[in-house]
Amino acid sequence: MSAPRNSPSHSASSYNNVATRSVRVRGADFAYRELGPEHGVPLILLIHLAGVLDNWDPRVVDGLAARRRVIAFDNRGVGGSSGSTPDTIEAMARDAVLFIRALGFDQVDLLGLSMGGFLAQVIAEEEPDLVRKVVLAGTGPAGGQGIDRVPALTIRATLKGALTRQDPKLSLFFTDTAGGRRAGRAFLKRLKERTDNRDKDISPPSFRAQLKAIKRWARQAPSDLSGMRQPVLVTNGENDRMVPSQNTLDLAARLPKSELVPLYPDAGHGAIFQYHDEFVTTALAFLES
Image (tube, rainbow, N blue to C red; front, side, top):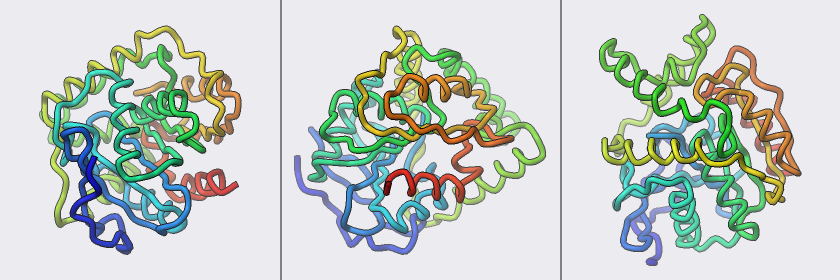
């Protein structure tokens, strides 16, 4: 593993202008962006299905980075990261651990959104000394209710989006109400604020590998989770159609040290983006307590 390359200072004022850097991990270059204070336990962001660096809401990242060192990265073979994308959640989780170690960290906090939340659970259980605290958003346990429908829902929404020229995240992440549609449009507008050095979209082979990984996760025996000893903040919208909101309640009930945020009203899978100010305040309070 080499030291991070392309490494200017990460004291940029915003996620929209921070440099994209890379670190070599077992033959692959992992693309990442880092900002916030250079001290304290880093917060590693684990992205959703098909997500790249530019899919993180800058309001969430900037809000967290006001007080925390925040690092977002592309999974192996996705966006600006090279290599071949794994087709199991466990292999992706091992990659994330290798990435964290390559940056020289021996303790981190994790924020896992959707598929990223699957990774966070595996990392926290397999690397208990590495992970201090975990935030799980819009996610569920292995074998969780309705998670097996994620691939079909995503493919349908992607095809419909191509036909209607509408971003599939509008229907997948937000409720089909006036408030949900308004929040979705505002979110998509924020994602376009970065104009220079934008990340590449996920490739079709990598997308297929991630869909296969999610299907396998969904078909596993239900997770025990009693071995996950870290404090965990669990959050979602009240109407998540991708990873049904019941999974959020299920996670909170199964985890020994969980704190459940009341489900955000009129919100779905992208609740932490729709309620970005409230989420950032809650997450920072949890991470700093």
